[in-house]
Image (tube, rainbow, N blue to C red; front, side):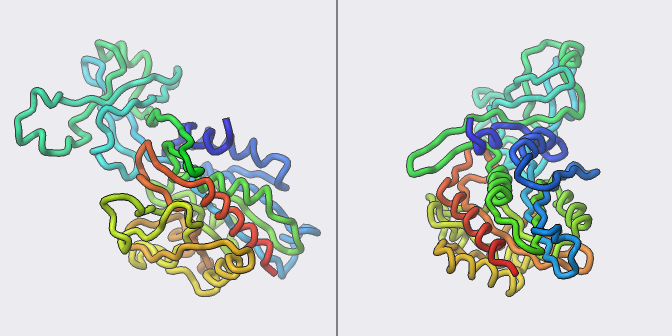
Length: 350
């Protein structure tokens, strides 16, 4: 199993990212000078500049932030027949939940379940035309009583989606949690490949709980207090039916997306000097970039750039189809070009 597949299939919903922390730690041991875990659960890998640059007054501290968490569910209630009612963790369209296979991560081990609801055969015509609300769904774990269920699971247990990882033609991949295990993969590989140079210290951070409020980015950025930061994430690829190009201009196999504005400016408005760093690297390394001004969601960059007195921050994202589903599709070519772009940008810093 290669690293991208391992990151995709491994569970780690918001607040329960420990298994992803373990993967990052294992991958970066021996490639960085120090690995820390903070109170929130963020993992911080540090590659110091030559001659211990972090001690120099003119050193540059660079933060690479990739959130580790994925969307998921959590056990809210177990009814008298042993069916599990759940709450959503992160932004999930109820339409994608029906009939999904899930794993409930109980203290005594993992339990497989399936999401069910009232069958369409017993719905009225008006009901069949509506999307079933998640509050009218349940998880069947194959038991017949609350007591039997409580031998296996408990309220508060995290629930992840059980999905396969596939390699498609044209270097495309399909899997769950590509938002944002792609960013984690990029961060890991950049930390491995960047050169150590005088007075440039790089902090590769796997952040927690981005999907529920950018929480890990806030605390880790405060701790590190970097001079420059990049959030590594995914962005919507609109190159499929049902999307207009102006709604989501990024396309697969066309290179990384440099986000200039997201959430209509309520998120990040990338500083000109950060934009220049990325576009200069794009030109010098001959790596095509896609520029994006977005009106939808945001990333860890929104929290990072408002930390302390303000931190110059940019976002580099990999275009990805069907984000926040179990069947997201992305391009390994775009992922590799994103790594190359960031390595070039960091190596060019002086």
